Length: 79
Image 1: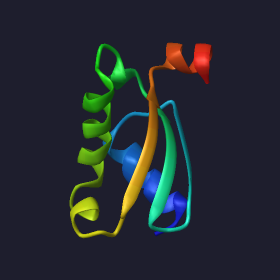
Image 2 (image 1 turned 90 degrees about the horizontal axis):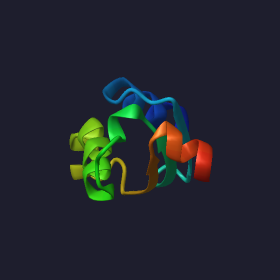
Image 3 (image 1 turned 180 degrees about the vertical axis):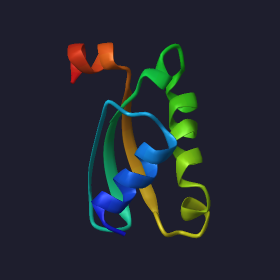
Image 4 (image 1 turned 135 degrees about the vertical axis):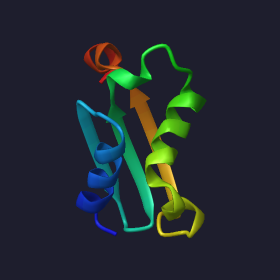
């Protein structure tokens, strides 16, 4: 899977104002910025992203995804 393919999957399932991916095809690092994260704890945010991936995580198509999940305000402040 390419970064563009993974980004498309995440952004189709979750409205993102910014989505940045880097990785080797199985191990990924992501910065994901979304209004949907407002009021959510980190684990809830990560679960939302994992939900967009569905079976791709379970079937090992995406082996590992390390993510930084931020609201737009957090991105402005800490991005």
